[in-house]
Length: 250
Image 1 (cartoon, rainbow, N blue to C red):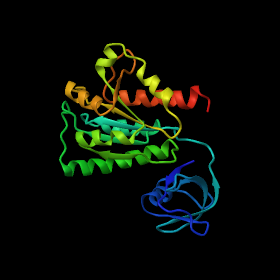
Image 2: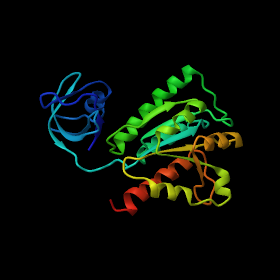
Image 3: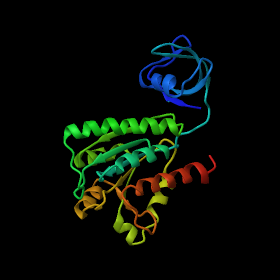
């Protein structure tokens, strides 16, 4: 069943859907009156709604039944990536959304080859937000992850608002560090937040690691193998899903 994120809460027991969602409902899905779709409201409530009316530019839904199934991780995981090359950031946002990330932050690292001006960032942000929305719909999320760009300094200033901050560091993996990620998961309670920071293809410079640690972050390895910039965030998210959603049996 198709899922749509809508901007308005129900009014008089009905929701009117317009814009891109309407186009998809009417012209891509070729929906008919009586069809049912998932609708996700701004408060992250998800319902099954019945299509009551379809006009030239809007779809009207009613007869709502609330969805009770929990689809979000019990902890909020934010993925921060040093700007990678090509379309790797698109891939990270798409697959990371499917795996349950709450937010994504992209920032320039010393070894980043990519350097975007303000116009390029705005254009790329629009694309990434669309990717996140479509991936959230496809994976039946009840929230669309926040996507943003930040400077290195802004990223550091953001550390205090998270319960935990981890830096995926290649040298930690090379040295066989395997405990920090599990120890962090073990400390986390429902509602806690984790910022996981990943470098671009060239990894982090030693002075960047020093700044991270001075700001309270802890370095961790992600198993015995060295992962690509676009693979490492997905490894962490998959590990979190296994730990918090499968192994505990919650």
